[in-house]
Image 1 (cartoon, rainbow, N blue to C red):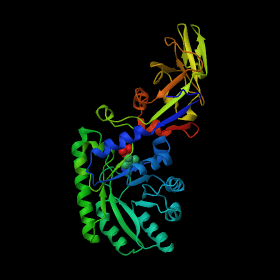
Image 2: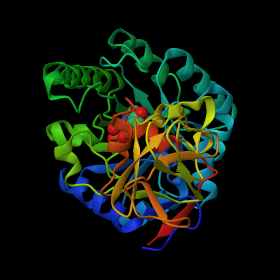
Image 3: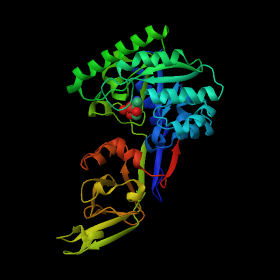
Image 4: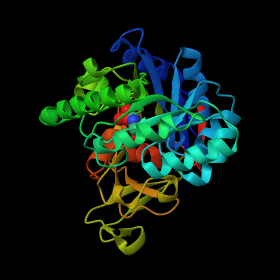
Length: 368
Ligand SMILES: *Cc1c(COP(=O)(O)O)cnc(C)c1O
């Protein structure tokens, strides 16, 4: 491992490959694998990640918004890209870049049908999102006849798949609810097949769904967080390797006398003699104020240094009283062994939020 001289997010493509193969091993060889690369591939780098996964055999990609899909196409990604939450404003762009919309309501279905007709399309692939209990996006079961009617009257569209999303796939206490979602999905998709007189392929599972409900894999699964090396339980985590390591460096060390304070608002006041290290990353880099005041810690030479005081825009201070270290030494904010999940936990958040928040100011470094 190279030594960081600034704040960098190192991305380990061997770990990505390991996670991809592990998740693949949980499903049948014939089941398609969609890699979710929304939000800069969970804060890493969508284009590099997608191109690498394309090489490994990923069948499909998903992003949240059309502009994320456009960036992937401009980066050279050729596999189909599902846009999970497209906005009507982006429909022309979406068609021009061969992106496939997830349509979730009568309004968006009709709006997309209109744009596809105006753009002279026939059989443009679309994906239909069903609401089976998450109550976020999707058609309700009573909307299915109308949805089928619109599709049948719209030769410019072709329903390529039908999908839904689980609300609590990681929580086995919610098994009964999840089984209900799986049953509703099957019933609703069957109904749609009958009305359309054909069968768009089906997909339902996210990462924890793949691990806990592989029987419901249908023809495709969609994985995000698992590819990046995080499950939602310690058991899942054991089989996965975090691909991202956020590294930084000690800018300055201060000797703190009893009664001295550290940082804005004097949020940390020392009762004893201590040593603090200042690091060049802050809330503008994605380390929000929730991580301050001892709620998270970094690793320096394998030892844990708590964040003290308030997180600043461009800096944090950590307590290194018991850690032999000097200016210029490397610091691991999170990565394998000191995970994003652990960094996030005491601050009351989750790996997803920490990872996706690492800002574009942080240099990405690629280790193939
Ligand atoms: C983000 C997302 C996923 C990926 O979920 P993970 O828990 O990260 O695997 C899958 N499907 C939909 C609809 C999503 O929005």
